[in-house]
Length: 277
Image (cartoon, rainbow, N blue to C red; front, side, top):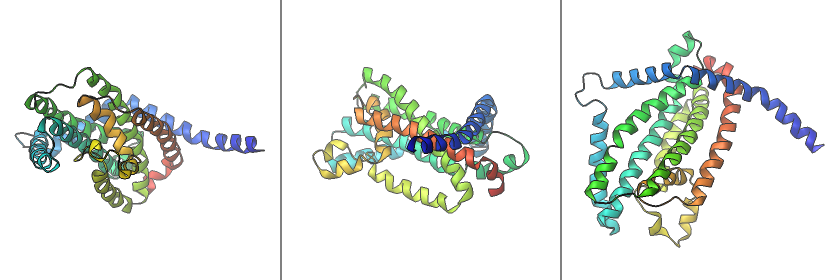
């Protein structure tokens, strides 16, 4: 009896997943157009600006230098240890929070295109992701400068940052897909997500090191924060240490479960999205 019910549920979900898969394949086939739209967004944002997107990099560098000196002194940590930690943390937090925040409005901001041209919905998610990827490309230039200043190299573990970033991107894309659908239907959710990200900033080891809370019960609670692990699988290799196995496990499981949810949400809501805009 249970087996029959389970198989029935699986069959009822299958059409939604198939619809989403076709949408994603269509978006990937038109990825060049999505990148063109994203690049046009960046060009419009920094039109007539001499430094363009590097203004964000300059601001990020100033922020890293200021916070690194102040909080490093407050925590009593050597600059060679704390500055790489906070720099990589801030750079990738800005990427993750920016992608998620803008992902909430992916369909809303593309309203005119969606209502006039029939395109895969996932294409608009790629557009937003690419915009933030370009900004990350600018900001990551700060990382080698920081490592040069503190005279420290990440070692061979830096190669683990590649699969770590791929996992981070996969998780961000499913989060953006789900939120873009939900926020098109429920606009107040955008403000809720923004406020939640502000709280998660302090619950994620960006300004503080996990080692400083070692042995305290609070660190076990903070490890339930998925961004704790998403950041760890990229930052730890870049700062010279391999990520914990639990971080890899959480991120892989999150990507699998999250994409299943994203496929169901997009598949079931796809035909309603234009009416919500």
